[in-house]
Length: 422
Ligand code: AMP
Ligand code: GLY
Image (cartoon, rainbow, N blue to C red; front, side, top):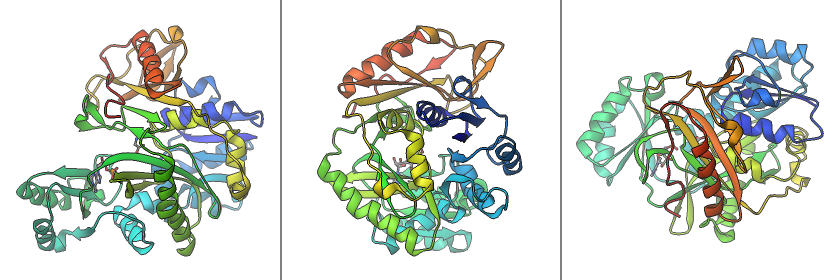
């Protein structure tokens, strides 16, 4: 099969790695890809929103299946673009329609959907500039900490959690007045959920679904979960506290009603649903939906899938997920994200990465890297994800850390406490 992956981060390298293992793969393309994906397929310099260039590539290269990695092209309607085009409509595209992508593209849409289908989540209300005064009143009626979310996509930065009421009011005002541009013309204020977070990943063809192994990521830049939010500094799977009983509750209370709700709304959804959950006293509450796999969660979840990943994607395209049996690796997988000094603030790119050849017993997934003249250079904030298997989390982490030490680039940084709270 001829396959195209859209995206160029660690998640897409992990997807490329899973696809490249399949005997069903004929040729793999990644747009735009990175230095890691270049070793598994053909990188094509196309931006994730350049649908016209994607069409040309798909037709020129007789691509049969497209796997969309990031949320931006999904929210921009890449799936609808393919379905509406006479020459592309037979191509299998794994990703939700634009309407389905609203589960991530609009926090208000997602919260209303959860309420409509009785999916457990915190209380909320949504405000616009015109209803600012009501927003102040709503805040004053809530207990701290106050959770304020930009309605639209804000590259993971649109969520503020604030202890002080006056500060929360100020932030509400500033969000509604352009703090996150168009993304915060609507702001969702929601109940703060206390508990321990984890994520569950579902792949659906609109009817049937499979639940992939759960994962937990570490979002803050600093050790002990301190400092600014990042895209994710490390992840583990499985999550020790997510026992069978808890995961059954997730399936019954969250996954099933979500699939049912999408169907009832007439939303075309063939793709991943990433469910961000809070475990509150043994019960799952949804914090958010994402309409794609996570990053760095993909770097721990995909290595645990033993079933042919191309077969899983084909079954999704052909509505066969209901009958597909998926096998998982029982071992633990952990990943450590190595980042550029300064991230998630400003950082420099173009630093040479050395020592990759010394890595032993881990899989190095590239995130922000670029191949140049036979060298591998840093090309983003998150640079490399070092994933390892182990009989338990501790053993896997020890391997990831041992190999992270062997890799050098100027100002490299990584958290040394992934899994500290488990
Ligand atoms: P989100 O972008 O919605 O994932 O939010 C970013 C992070 O903020 C989440 O991963 C949580 O750690 C935290 N968060 C978001 N919403 C809530 C909430 N209602 N209660 C507690 N923490 C939250
Ligand atoms: N690691 C969080 C995300 O992919 O959204």
